[in-house]
Length: 327
Image (tube, rainbow, N blue to C red):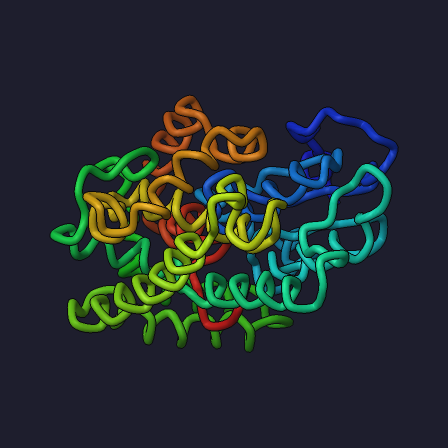
């Protein structure tokens, strides 16, 4: 492996508590699923190193990265010699291996089985939302969105739409170049063609939006059920849990797409609106969500040739273009 391929940058977490020093996260700042892992690392106060995978230049399909994750997806966590792909698996790994002493749990174990099941239930409900399809669909059906925010400025949306149309062909090209994992990439190409229908067909996209609304309605009902002495609770309890991480990143994505008016603002779901404003003050949120400076950098990168356009889309819609399983 070339020296440039092994370059590791220090993560933004500077709290060296003697734990997690062997953690290396491969990710992209605008990857939906990467953001969930980054927020978890900050919530657990775990120092880590990071390697930014330049999805806009197709770095996730470089042979050195495909040796780490044959799916060509971020995030991927390395802990020494252990390699953990998939955000869901990474969150479980962090919870199982880094939940002692000053490192808080994200799934409470001391509040009874009912609370634990509630946290896991909401985690599952939120995880089942196809964030990638919601993101790309919002570009093709802007009538559902009001005032999209960074990073989804007009030029970026235009670039990503062009990339979406060509992504299956890009995958087949990479499959030819990587015969050892050809079947995986061809499977992803086939799924991408199916997903494209959900993205471009208005009625199919409306079904996805209805799925999101149903999940958020369940969240709103739970938040509304909190009694007066529970006003400082998060989604399930007084602690910030793995369910809150999923909800926070989802709400932030929907807000940046301009879908907050469609789902919760204007009095539609006042408790979710209040929750989102509150969680934006949390330190882990501030350390997870990219700054405006990164937006400028991303815009420059999205001017890359269309041949890597599918990778550009991957940078934004969730750690990979494809949503055919829980990430």
